[in-house]
Length: 114
Length: 115
Image 1: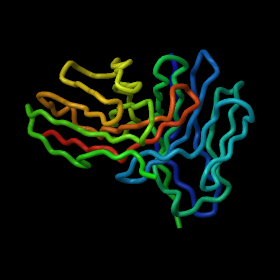
Image 2: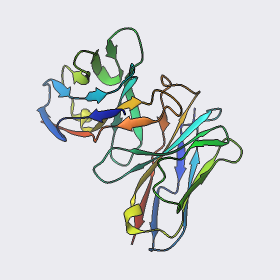
Image 3: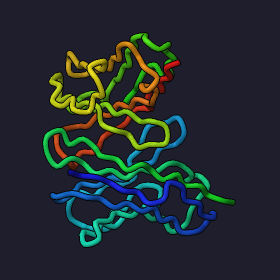
């Protein structure tokens, strides 16, 4: 069975500091991985996705993530945090067959300090 | 173009009432998903449609939950005899095609509160 673990339900960083949000997955087949951001009272917006090919994936708003098979990780990073990055972030793995439903982690709420 | 829309955005129901939640996916999208997001949790899968066919309803928590997509576009999630544990945000998502690499586009959700 596939699963996703996000370490740290709350992360605080200073404005301009590095953002690192952790995601580890469990999958018996090559995974398809996604990071979504959710602002208050809004739906989820795709930041980036890994399907095949290059393991370093660049997304919107300056975010990127690196797929590391040996570590079963897909951590999200951004070199310099901005106040507008404050939101909840979800890592998800797509089902390998059938419906291709997403299995989400429990989310990490990012707070950016001025 | 228009994204995924959901209505109502907020719904308050008394315990025991029936509710219907609507999802308008992106036009032409084949796949449609419903998820339930409890407070402080990640979304959890409820059910999946490919066009008008409901191919997976393994996530529906009880037989009080029912979903349909009769013409392969708009979908309705119905909850009968609502209970307090049904309080959550219900998210709808659509995807252009079938396959694991196609991202899902999410609507803003319907926040259901059962009193």
